[in-house]
Length: 307
Ligand SMILES: NCc1[nH]cc(CCC(=O)O)c1CC(=O)O
Image 1 (cartoon, rainbow, N blue to C red):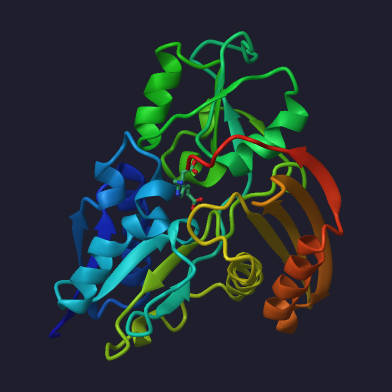
Image 2 (cartoon, rainbow, N blue to C red):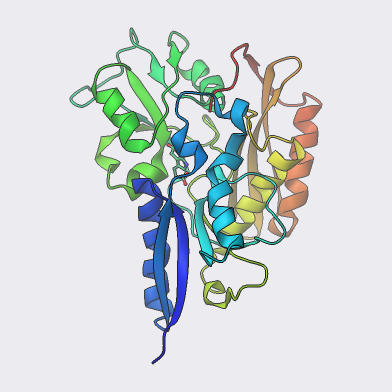
């Protein structure tokens, strides 16, 4: 049998590669007529580790090189962590499929051998979304930025710079690091980032994406629709500390959101439920509600964003 050859583009971090291999493994099982090859690349976001991403271009920096490779036909698809995708997706490069969702929660990771966080040291996270929500759970804690890929962050933790760090459960689990997780934050207490734990497959508008028709998990896709609609409405694509987490249950979808008012620097959170076919409208409705400051006031944050 003549196999159809495709090239899948991915960031070169260990997590990105593991995630892309999950997609390739799925293809092998469901579409043996397709032969997928992986092409990894360093993105600008991976190269610049000493500056704040919101000052140099936001989330787009993680996809620019991958988009270029698609447009130049060097690749046929890109695999992304949905949470790293900007809100504006080029029309020529549509998102063609979404994976089922791994564990969407944020988790606490402690230095090797520790049983509880030493809060005389800072909690490591570079995300203002996480800081705003964690301040309420650890009112006495200091926070300090930690960047780099998953392994780099965990190495910095084990070297003793931090009392704990906060990461996404999904990355830890996919990397076989679940044993390092010491606590899980409920998604209503620390609302995750839009798209957290879902993989997105991006293609070319003129390409053949038929092999991914049965890849999409419709629950995850509807959840991502509600979450990204909320963030898009609030224009929080690149740097605003906005959180959104949706959960489908039967015909219903429940959405938790966090909104940060850049002018007053106040944070509010709230939630809404509705029919899952109205996922997009639900995101807009919750965004408008929180923009009117109708929600639970979470405090004021003077720190600048530092993703
Ligand atoms: N911001 C980096 C990033 N992008 C996706 C994941 C984890 C996997 C996922 O959420 O899909 C992570 C690591 C983290 O935030 O701890």
